[in-house]
Length: 300
Image (cartoon, rainbow, N blue to C red; front, side, top):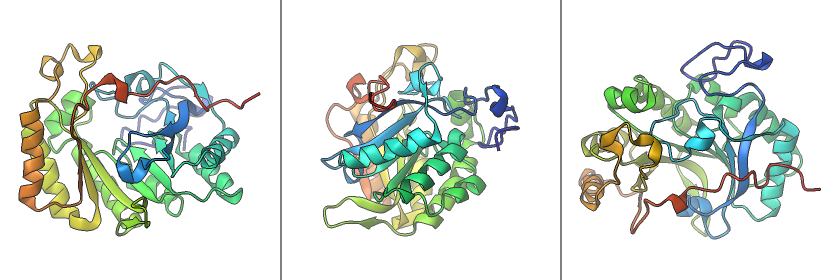
């Protein structure tokens, strides 16, 4: 899979096994920046105990407004083998994590699959969350069938123009739609336990961007018309304008309360009920974790 890499829709074809880097910025050697309990996901994912989140380095999208741009660009990260990954999963389970949350893992898919298989043999029993920007190939997601319980993709844009401008991926709307179809097929209807924690299902995230209310409405309409109550939707207001977006002046501000409310009101107008919304002041850098390699290396 990695000698002429075709793991993502970009299909850049580089030989990552022998040290070349793809569009994702990574060779075949998995890199990660943090593995710890995370409390800022949707309530049915984090709960009070936290989600056992592993943040992988590199990204196949690298959106210009990325909140995790330091790891998405591959600037930071430490090597982590399949053996060590499986240990990390079990350690997070021992810490009381509600689930194992794989953040942007698609470009390391072969290693992640081996690590999950190994950990499950050794007693990993909590749900597995696949947390992705949505730019995935459904034929590769099928390798995760039976391994992933909860799918947590973004659906960023319906506009190919916005996708091209902000993610250099004009085919994002179609590719993300194909991937989402596969995720919903695998997950089936959402399942929760008696405490309200999701055990199986799909939550689609959509980050409202400044000046893009119309596209956000198009996203919600597509999701409702296509999937109805087979999915939950998380409408996010936490967009934070970091210094690297200054060359995109239209993005160099937070969204207004009026913009966010207009999008939420549209979800209500459509009849959507399985929706998470954010309230209060969410657009703060404090929501961005410290990528300090916590939990990556074995303790002495």
